[in-house]
Image (cartoon, rainbow, N blue to C red):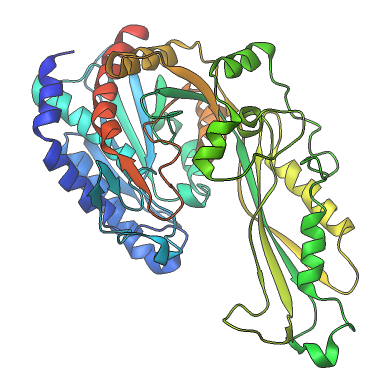
Length: 458
């Protein structure tokens, strides 16, 4: 690769950061209806950015939800075609008082860029824009053909995108799909994720009396919906951290000896997690290490629970209803739809008398694993090593990107997950940030990768 590409990135760093701050200023929160116009604004911003860097056939696809943005550069005849997927929507910012700076006014502190979306995923998407621009501006061409698909609903489970992919297979056809929406293991340690856990999310709604009641008049005479909900939630696990839903583990694929040895070779101890997380000790499913629980074992977690009086002080009331939000991280070969059915049966059988319960599905995605010896993945490893000067680690990821399994199932194209975030960058939490060291090195790595990929897939 021409050194002029790296020089271009260095000379334009401040300009790039200024443009990224503009992108981060758009509160494109896909889950909140009041931000629908902001999500559209972000889509338009992405389309303009793609046009600016030299992409052709840029289009914003309107949907019944939030838009998709497409663009392409198909001029490298005979060379591989890459589909770059990313998302421009972000998570809500609550609780706002825990932010040290406004979430949509990007601020640089200690060479870290603080803003909602800085790491997940606007910052990483933006790096792909500028890496390609650097190559085009300095050489006039690209070593690979490129297609972009940037969506605005990843943070709500990509509900519409699978149908779009199904209906536009020719448009999205490629030799490899590249996604930068994952994290490196730690600072200075590049990581390629070759597997992701799937996801299913439900909400449990417990209903008692028709309205809130005076606890002095009715306490002890009816089932308290909060008590009932706690009983249901408590039934999901035993004291060994194992999930007690009948059939939950039936289809879980076992960890291979080779993968187990690879995990152990990473040398990551529980103490490093304890220090990073600020907890007195780790806890989870008995018989498995923390890495195994994170990457290859399924989970069932309570993400939120609410009901009754929430204000300051006390209000002597029996609540009419109570609610809980539950998500399960799934592993091969678990099916999200089957898991939801198992959860519903479990909840029904553990509902105490005196209340009614409704269970609704709000998110799902299949797990995904790809061979990490694929040439496209190994080429990514070499690109990382050229910039970071250390061997690349190949791991599974504990999180979920629902559309990845869809790409695998519908397009049948290998997916390379090459992320540049770090585990402690607070994505989905207050004070989300992105280390500018990885902003700089990441764009260099991406540029090297396109040349490595050209050779690997010839």
